[in-house]
Length: 218
Length: 218
DNA sequence: CTTGATAGTGAACAAGTGTGCACTGATATG
DNA sequence: CATATCAGTGCACACTTGTTCACTATCAAG
Image 1 (cartoon, chains in turn red, brown, yellow, cyan):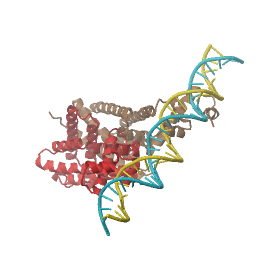
Image 2 (cartoon, each protein chain N blue to C red):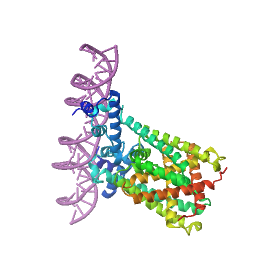
Image 3 (cartoon, chains in turn orange, blue, cyan, brown):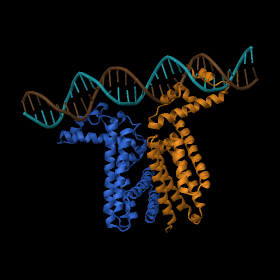
Image 4 (cartoon, each protein chain N blue to C red):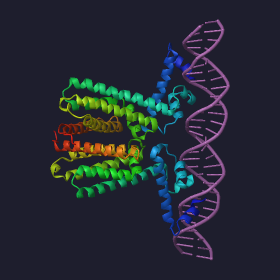
């Protein structure tokens, strides 16, 4: 069974570029699937290609190395993370309680893209070289944007960029902790889910109380 | 060069148990050294034994598998983490500012045992199976103890166990973030170190402000 | 209709992997 | 002093790994 002929059978009338893109995505998805309970470093090129249904050497038609695939995974995962922020902004405007709505979108977005979030969390510290660096850079950028968002609140308009940044970091750290808890727990257990988001709300509330009482020193 | 005869030459008058323990520790140390910029999953049995200076098959005289070595690493690393808490308690009594002294001991302890802290942070999420579970359990226990400690403060004596636990989790999460920053940075860069602990102090201060203004709901 | 580009194939390679086995020689014990 | 224990050796095995190379069948373009 040749993947070329197979492609022809399953999808008629597709351009060559489209099909290339498709198997490329198949590789990405295969990797993401295998990374559910594994590590990028412990994932072999051959495993990915086997899972994707192509021959090992064909891998190189799409990526120069596993490291390259890793970077792609970071990119794609970060895209859904940014999507989450966009979603959060939208939901916030329609609702009244910032905390509840934020945590709610966090929850639904994580559940809708578990693989991406899990990957980010796993490789954030475990990743090697470029992958780890890419994640760190993206998360820094992410926190910076949040800091800008925070600065738009009336109560914080006068605060230093450094203070805003610190608060953003703290919030990101806390929320990433929640993400990991969600990704770790058994998917079907709604009970546990509710408990986790309840804790997340409390955490966020405590931080915001700290923010409200904040007074910069020096 | 046989490790048996070598042992005899370097250390005269040592019991067999002692020497076994010594090469066992050599394996642990070798692993920790290799894990500075790698992953437990990507670390092979043969690499560890080579680094330790023994033959691959001798590994099994000390550990049943790499997973077993991993568990040992968790144990050892967690011991130094507990040692840090003990140290923090001691320093706190002699000083006045809880935040400053706590962060200071965190800093010196991390710098004194970088390998252990790095290992914990890496494998906390990246680890597979038993290792990850062991770390999760230990950290949960760790947070529980901190919660008890918090409960001893006069201001929090009346609070619910759940609230205390939530605050402890938040503090642990924030401090672990600081640990990773420290472990990541170039060891020689004192400037960066100072900046990191300054941020750590701010973060902790903000959380404590939140704690001071906390009022449980429902 | 012909022809060049190219996504995917399949065999081969050297290198590295975990583990089984029989062994050796220093130490502990009777 | 004799003997049993056992930490460490060395060879062997069957597998998996990343990467090379020449190939083939399809699609796109002239």
